[in-house]
Amino acid sequence: MSTVRIHTMFKRKKTPVKNTKTSSSPSPSITIITKTTKMNADLHSEDDIRIAGTVEGEVESKKKVILSQSGNIKGTLVAPVADVSGTINGDIYTNDKLTLRPTAVVHGKIFAKKIAIEDGAQLSGAFNVGPDTEVGKLNRNTSANGSNKSSKGKEKAPLEKKED
Image 1 (cartoon, rainbow, N blue to C red):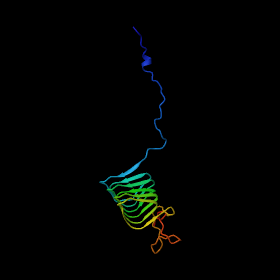
Image 2 (cartoon, helix red, strand yellow):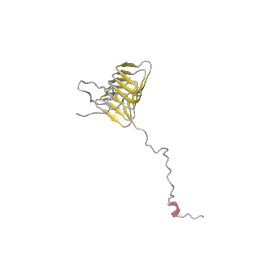
Image 3 (tube, rainbow, N blue to C red):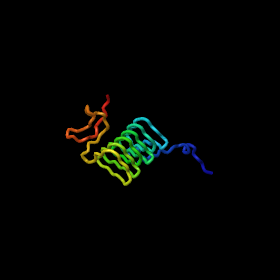
Image 4 (cartoon, rainbow, N blue to C red):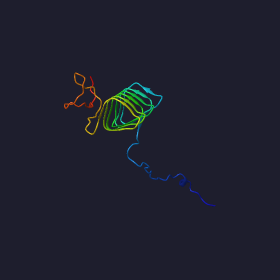
């Protein structure tokens, strides 16, 4: 007959916990506006935004905005990178790259450093595209006659929002 020591059954073995995280950065976040959602408000995010529904107001992201084929923005889009497959009735400001997919429909001014327009995209408005294009956050700071011209006479994108 063998003897079993009870105190060994209740002793806990301390094992170090291994960190299974491969990166010290937090996981990516995304704001999603679904196809059945309609917003009548400004949308501002530090993260990516994906829109499949309708937003009536300014859409601003510090990262990327993706407008799906069913997506609709009735207002201004401001983001470093934008990928548009839906409809925008308003101005677009991207300080990196704007991609207009074949199903994109844009009515408004575009300010971008780089632009890719795929066959089928529909555009109605003015463009200011190139590495020297001044692109920044939307502002309402225009001259008394309503124009928004730089000292050299070129139209430029406003740099910041001005409150009244």
